[in-house]
Length: 344
Image 1 (cartoon, one colour):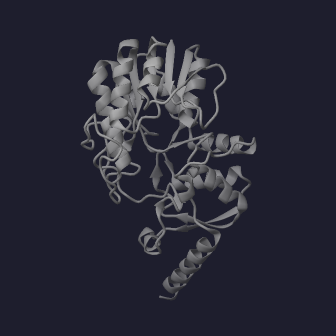
Image 2 (image 1 turned 180 degrees about the vertical axis):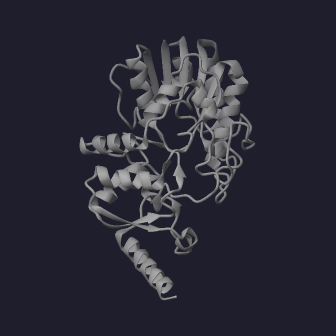
Image 3 (image 1 turned 120 degrees about the vertical axis):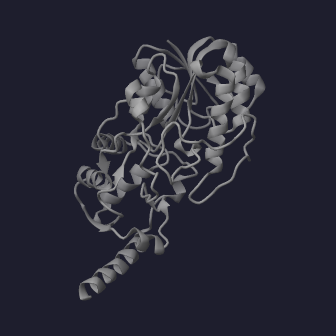
């Protein structure tokens, strides 16, 4: 199978490239070459997806059985690219996001849930950022979906809507942060209920699913059913890094929010909204998605970090993590709350 990956040097794109090669595919990547690194064995085509001459030169290198688009964010750019590739590509697989849903992250979601309204020819400034509701990123993903579907049709299109993807080479660094925090040891602010169900998915499982032969349709891609918890995640991080940490579960999430702790970023992966970890991926399971235990993802990510792996510099990385001083201060306040409750 001839596979073209738009992107292919970071995290999911690189993992798809590696796994396609292992499956015997002939893999090309189309990327600017400014960041990331080349996967061994790929045919690297340099170019910018926003440059019409580069895209025309890319199309001339076809045909391909499958294009996997891991770097699609602006609808009108995706529309132009899809139109250029349509004559030389059998199937188009778009990596979208659960952020494309109108109800993310406040409502439980299935593939039949409403998506954000965004035209296929929208530009980068379309949409708005809500809190906790829609995001400009989500509007863009919804518009990119429409661009591909309008060009390739439903039978030749696969759209994957992952939730949180973790694993080796994760560029945002959410799991990286928790692993390094556990390694430092001491009292760790563990947010919310330890039994809160979560459903991050391993990057390698997303890559395997993207390469299912003949895949078409729209699929949520999360660990489903949500079989693991925040306690499983943080406990695995602690165990795998040496059991240096003493987890202090601050179970009153309303109180924690009152202290100004930012969900999702200051304490990565902590989110209280009803839909954050309620994404139904049973359709993908039926089509071939298999997800590994979260502990395996944690262990392999730690192994990658120990072997010299490092998160790339990404705009979202700077938002991650609570400072040591702020963590101590909040835990001190929490201790006082617990004493007051005992006294009462």
